[in-house]
Image (cartoon, rainbow, N blue to C red; front, side):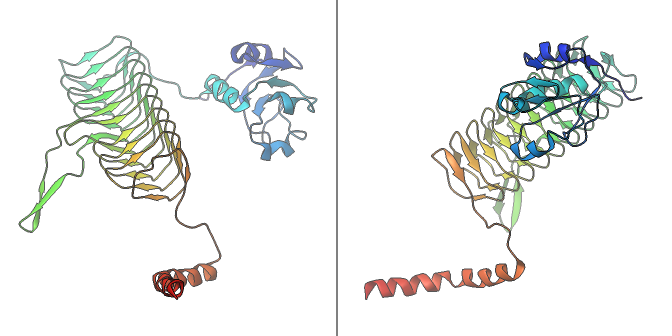
Length: 339
């Protein structure tokens, strides 16, 4: 059954610390885009590209910057950062019903696990020996928490997540469905014509307020730990190899792969499908563009990109042929320079 919500603009104004323009008693029952919102829904304008929809929007009210509010005649919640306001108010309309505190009947919890009375453990979840689950933590249906792991206060482990042994999850961290945290890293020694497995005896440490997307895999360290620091954001379908370190508040988009022992600084952004080689360092405040192939350390803040942008197929084929000739062209240019 769908949950229902009801807030007046006065209530939302108080919660957001906004300035109100318009009818304080107007009731808001949901959130939507400028294009789709109806007369009882709240919208927002953060991207100037959507400003053209403002005057024709049917929204009951709009979260706006002071500049955008000047020419708007409808109800408005005025904030310096409308997108942040939208982020905050979105939690008031969250449809996730949560879990009641306690342990579901079908869950399997080891007798020596420590589970706080305010924690929630869902149907068919498994909590192994030596696990500590702190106050307010939530373990959804089908999740597995490996032995000697710690799930800190108010963390949320979603459906079918696998937390392997000896993993630490920080406070308020969210790990989405089917992620795997702490599987063996890709450690092998080659001898006698075959591969010999190296035992991965490190762990994984996830900081506070981290969010990890569905189907993302974070390998345990070979010796020390793989570390994801406070406030980091990892999208879906990311591979983080053994002993990688991700700095505070760094955001990594989907399909990124980071090879072993690479250190990424704080406040970085890594766009989709980028690939990072192993044993390199990325400085703080670096932006790596989509599909970037990073094979050496980046020591200065700034934006970096590799690969090519989209072009017509025939043009791409011609350029690909020319690319193969670059070395020969360079040699000829050196000869001409000498002459």
